[in-house]
View 1: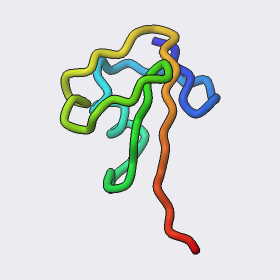
View 2: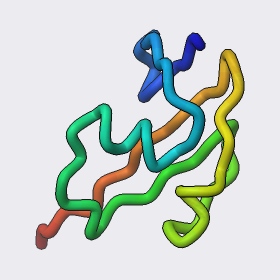
View 3: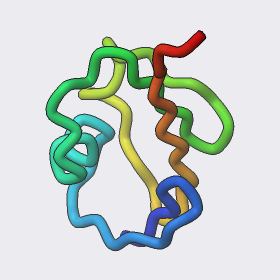
View 4: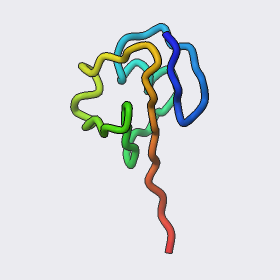
Length: 66
């Protein structure tokens, strides 16, 4: 399926959000939030959240600063 991840077109052969996170090599998911089509998906729902062709995924990473 075709996905738009952080405004970058990607091909993805998996089904759910957890598989996408794994395919993107996001090993440490602490401080990461995912929004699908502008709706945040809680981390405990990633495994059951089914992706669809042309979904828009936004990966937000928390950073420290001051």
